Image (cartoon, helix red, strand yellow):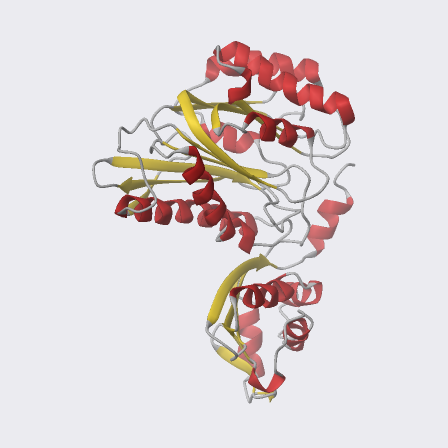
Length: 400
């Protein structure tokens, strides 16, 4: 059993955080640090983009042993496509944090987000890290949640308390993401902390599984970035017995972790660049999981579907066309389509629905597209948003 609580990455015992403006951005926070008082089990899942940013490569190297104690993150500069200098800068960030905290360098992870192709202003970053370390505290989670934002309009944070057989543990998380969102894995940054005790291999399996059920079921624009990752630290400071893969505690922890990642994923979609609608694409009756996912994403990524949603135009033919173009073998006469329960299409043709009711439903800020392929028993929910004028404006002016 778990229950949501107020907080984020410092809700779990032994975690401290701090976030400041170091000058990468003009005024907004742009540098954050997460720290565990003790060495922690650690795992990460990374973007599958073949072009990977320097901080991601440094983090991969440092996480080979599955242990970490600190994460340094900057926004405003992706430090991607920056060659050898970019790698040196990412490594230097971990060295500075390690020196300031008196821990080994390979226990420090690093992440960056922002514009690709620009070098970090390391003089500002170095001074920022020196200022940041003394500010670490149990109330600094919200500052880091702000420091990692780019085009986001709101910080994204969540925390839960989980009752295990012998004690209570906590899981907290923050995330950033608004555009370039079609995790595979994953197009955003997310950082998770827990005071549960979980060994490294199991922690990684738990994270991969949870990401597949959350961050990998969302899309804003179908683009995958160069920098992005989900990282989890488990420091065991709650004093609970170690979680194993064949216990009730395992099930309880998995359920709670899935809630945290799922809530963060939905927050990203709701804060999609220029988004005005939160959309659930529900596919039922598929032959297998992969086919259900392909159909759902074909609809969720369709620019024509997303612009119709923004225009509040019940042009359901675009949805059926996306289903047919998904590459999955479907039978038109078997497909049914409903929006928030109003059936628009079944048995190969339009139903006798009220046009006024359809337009009313399409004007709702939250919409559920319900597709039944009637070919099997598999189902899936994928989350997306509409595509607005503001999305084009934000991305047309991103570097200017």
